[in-house]
Image 1 (cartoon, rainbow, N blue to C red):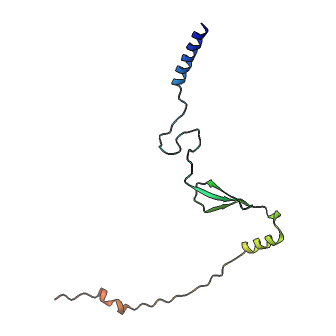
Image 2 (spheres, helix red, strand yellow; image 1 turned 135 degrees about the horizontal axis):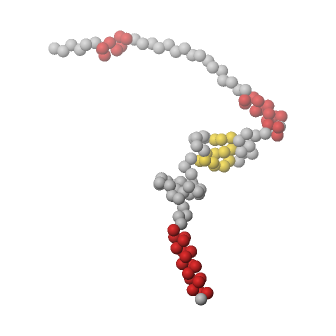
Image 3 (cartoon, one colour; image 1 turned 180 degrees about the horizontal axis):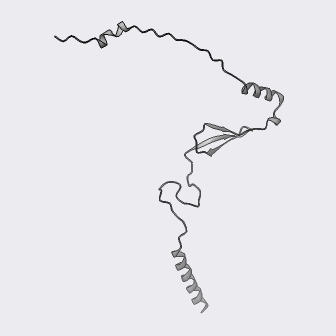
Length: 120
């Protein structure tokens, strides 16, 4: 009798489980195919380097293409020499020089291009 009840319970459980959907699939056919899950790619398409203040790098995903992302560092932990170097680096300006180029154009060299050809 006990085994009969166990078999009936297992049949009811399997019938109940067959009616329930566990995953909701989206209509798009790409790597992001479930709504509650992680992206199932070994390598992400857009990964960029994140540089920590100690010099170590890791790869992260971003929505915008960036060559290298630098994390801010604490200026209070720098030595005096490093602070001076940082100040010089921040206030560097490029000197702009204006150059005037003279363009020499001689229309006589191109007169054959707009002269009407004489057909005989």
